[in-house]
Amino acid sequence: AQTVTQSQPEMSVQEAETVTLSCTYDTSESDYYLFWYKQPPSRQMILVIRQEAYKQQNATENRFSVNFQKAAKSFSLKISDSQLGDAAMYFCAYRSGGHRNLIFGKGTKLSVKP
Amino acid sequence: GAGVSQSPSNKVTEKGKDVELRCDPISGHTALYWYRQRLGQGLEFLIYFQGNSAPDKSGLPSDRFSAERTGESVSTLTIQRTQQEDSAVYLCASSSDAGSEETQYFGPGTRLLVL
Image (cartoon, rainbow over all chains, first blue to last red; front, side):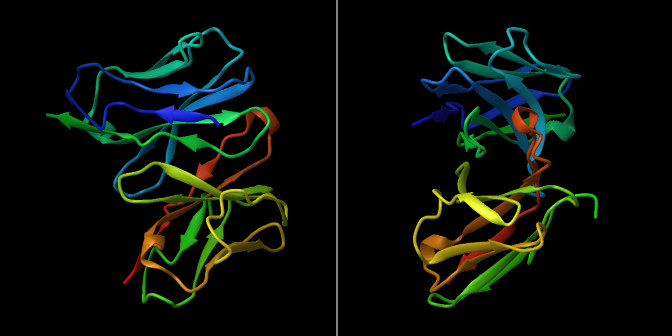
């Protein structure tokens, strides 16, 4: 069975600085997708970024980028120029190409200090 | 509405009672998902609907849990004879079934507390 591990329960970053959140996953499949979701106190999960396993190029969305290391099964999220609004729980998620459901890690709580 | 909506926002019930949680997906989204999020944990998949049928129910934790979807729209998750361990946030998501490019959009969830 696939698993997703986020080893950092909490992280803190100074406003305007850069922070990297870690995620590793375990799978024997070759066709899969990886996601980072943000969950603010409102509870609504918001998609931050996605990565297709077949793509070698790391995904980027404005201040958010990933470091996808397929051989190491690592999928970290880098947030540049951190803003107060980035404070939230961040969840890494995996989806098999053959299934529809997402498998989530336990999350990392990010605090942003002014 | 523009997004996924869920009701009620919060629900407090007594152990042994039945509860119904409702999800209104984004209009036109054919796929609908239910997840459960226990305190301090990530989301656990419960069930997936494609249209009105549920090809994957593998995440339902017991036969006390059931779900249905009608009109390829609203879905209801029912928990019978609730137990304290059912306390969690129940999140619904929908997608436009874009195949491999699918993105799931989540609602704000229903926080269930079983006393």
